[in-house]
Length: 282
Image (cartoon, rainbow, N blue to C red; front, side, top):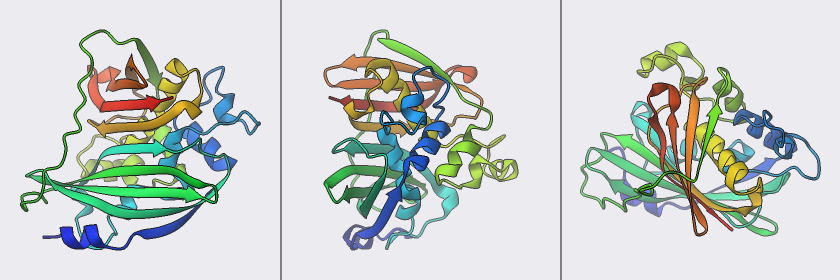
């Protein structure tokens, strides 16, 4: 079996040094569509008011967690069978505009879903002032299940049985993926039409983590007063593909300290894009 569960989950953590500046923050925010709104200077201008959306943690220092997970001991899989299944970030404090930090990553679990395996890569990041964030990346590997392991917890979060409190539309650019990939995700699936066709798509698709950032920004701007520092945690499941140039319909249900969210593709009869999505906030 290409995944050696014992070896993967008992291997020593891998450490990596991360560093970023305001330029990386600005580029990331532009890559998720910031700049169109009247109040977007808080994301796109290097003033004292510049803030960092917590989803920036997925690209900080150019270290993409999913790619690192596939090179961990005990993991030997065909990239063609791999999907990014979900993402969770928990932040200890607001992310700094300029940072130097150390990332410690390990395989926290490998779950047996029958026809597939799910690898949970956990990365903990801290700087000289203490913890910054923890991220869990769910890597879905088709054809690698059935090894008799634990099935793992269910992450399904049903939307409330009522109309959403707020709905936002976010139209992406035709070149959105080309801009977003400059933050560090160079997968040709998001840029090369021929590669996308070989992968089974009509054209390049948008990065799931780009949609992830777009949705968090919409929630912060719509229900959290534009204050990214209020976000404490953010989790999602990548439920379907999304093409650059399409429009996301983002439905939000407010609760005590949490906002449930769904994101769908307007032009394709509201096909699911992100589901089981929760933003936890102060």
